[in-house]
Amino acid sequence: MHTHQTYPAIIKRLRRAAGHLNSVIQMIEDGRPCLELAQQLQAVEKAVQKAKKTLIQDHLDHCLDEVVGPLARDQREAMAEFKEITRYL
Image (cartoon, rainbow, N blue to C red; front, side):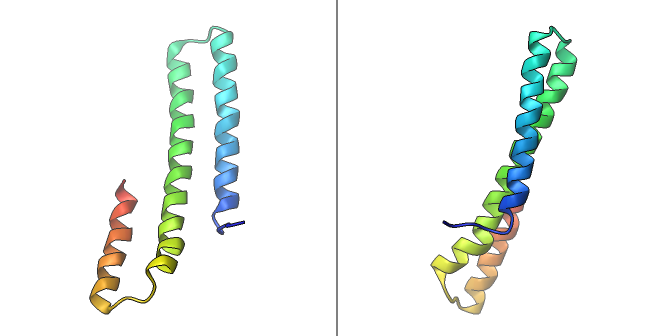
């Protein structure tokens, strides 16, 4: 099994998002105002986005380096720049 140090944090974030999502479902069933629903859905969306971003960054930081192997200095700089720019996705 392939795991990374960030997996526990990602799992924790996704479980929190799942709890929020269940709350939103209950809020809809209870007829809560749309503004409250939208706010809670935004929180769920942000939590999932953060989990995805963490997963992708972790993959780039570890798995990509393993596949690419040793690089020349200019290539290492380009790889570092690539990893850095992906933080803005």
